[in-house]
Length: 86
Image (cartoon, rainbow, N blue to C red):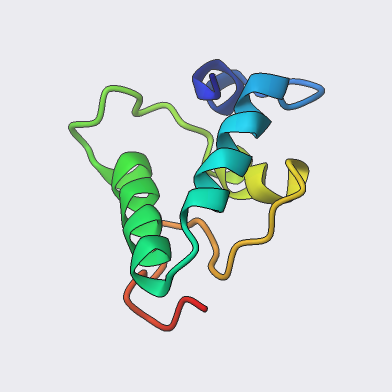
């Protein structure tokens, strides 16, 4: 539900997108879970073979805060997902 928003942007994050962000965050309660989610997101936005190569990284990085979610890392191609994620 976030793909068109993170490619094209918009005035507001779609409700379904924020629901997905919140749901994913609520499922990642342990350090290994948070690391796995971090790596999944990082791979999605940095993989040259990924279907959606036109992701706007600034929009992706801003999704958690726009959806009222705090995560213990920055969404960035340079994020070290194996560092402490508490």
